Image (cartoon, rainbow, N blue to C red; front, side):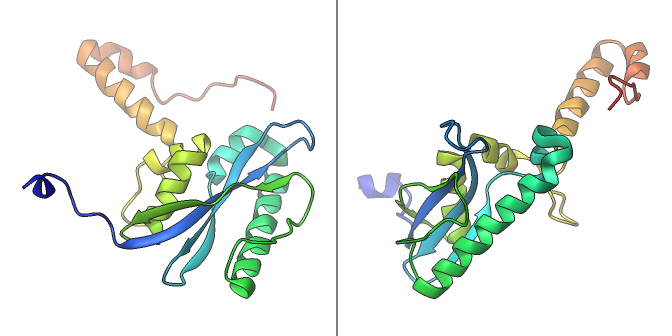
Length: 175
């Protein structure tokens, strides 16, 4: 009787692990930049855990360099799991890259494992999971646009005269 109150346990089982990058090697500060997932049925993949838009915001003119480092990490780990079928003995391509402890998981597919990995290991990646996706291109919409649209809607409900001050460009710095 009690079994009917709870959904069935997902049958898709696997392991996921976060991949951390220390932007300043030796500082101890780490950013989860990727997650790896390996299913029990042999599906293996590594994906980026932090949105490119967020990298642009955080690193500005150096964002291309940071993105290149992430791409290098992902390529290296994808090659390793393709050739070896596991995360064991992976040697990161450069200093400051740390593979987190593997975690067992279950879901309906590998995407579910990735959602778990990002939710439990990457605060900056969680923003990407919560961002709306446009059905046409499946790219995340700018997260701040969602917020500003909601503020505009609420402001319009309070005082329509104030809405003329929205969607205006202003210069806030020389850069």
